[in-house]
Image (cartoon, rainbow, N blue to C red):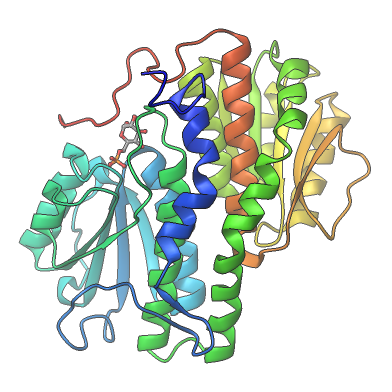
Length: 365
Ligand code: G6P
């Protein structure tokens, strides 16, 4: 067991640290940066993606947050209307056009019963279906029209970490691919996104190199009453994922919000005992988010921020620098939130790799 953990005390920390390598595997051989093109090595019938009118992502847990990130990329890069639904809530409602809809199931294991159920309902309705998964030969791959593998390598810790990063990177490539197929994304714009993806492994490594800063912050704030995570745009799914990670492994109360919603309710909970962790990067409308963070600080809350390298927010209590990688900056910020969750849980001696009541793969609906 100790050998398998490669010198780390927990699989989760090992897997957090494997992210640069996992991301390299995710993108290797798939990017043609000069041409602004992507080859995800999926076989579709010709024109399969070109006339898609709508994308509906279905997923659970961390994969659902990867889907929320992706839906924004599908709209922005592929010019397709995209929604994301919790798989157990997914139905093919009236007014939809199944034959022009692509249903994308995001599932690390490929075995989550809720997600498989959604795929089956989509197939029955006549939609085209696609899977983004880490697991070769998994059930989902047999139920869909096409699959892209995220190639993150095995993940043992119940709390998903490296697979979230590789899912988002894969979905970003899919968004570029669809955008190019449909003529919605210019080569130069695609190239910029692919360059950001290429920079992702190195950017994540720079964050990992700052782990001691995150550990210090975790030690400072671990006894707080609750933790709030906020962001806007691409920062929202990352805030939600940051809160999920913390609650899963530390058992502390944590909630993620769209930063603009703080004032519509959650602000009532904010006190000096509730740190606010904010995504303040490119792609997350950092200035507006910071305004909301300031409202929380006015009520005494400590504020911690993941901040783009070229920005500065002097009033933060703790700032974590995020290298400049464009629309994947929020994904890099997420690595700080993973480390924060890990160190809070570790300080509390929690069974990090096997949190109570949770399973790596949930095969019942
Ligand atoms: C379980 C795991 C989560 C995971 C979710 C979806 O709840 O504990 O970490 O995100 O299932 O799993 P999937 O394999 O479909 O991505």
